[in-house]
Figure (cartoon, rainbow, N blue to C red):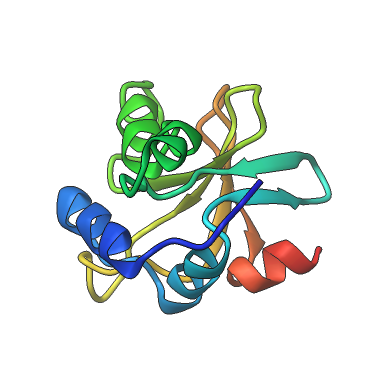
Length: 133
């Protein structure tokens, strides 16, 4: 069950990953840290930002974006600059990638990364479009 998160945990994640998340994504996650989404292909569990405010939230956010991105980067064909934001439970990931003109900022566009082939497919212009699907 998603719940709100303090912006300081998003900032901590940005510092750890040395990247800035897109504004709409941060806004959605501040309101509901994690949750579910569906695409035409699959159902997805959004990774939360790690919330260390109490034991319950630590437990609920243990599969956080930093951890899951680090795990995904161990796979041979995962894009090195991508940030994993969701999983379908079968190895595939929804990812954000840096802007072409500023590698320290992530694009709002969400991509489906196929773990078997490494192929990327655009699935939504932003997190709001993904949630509305």
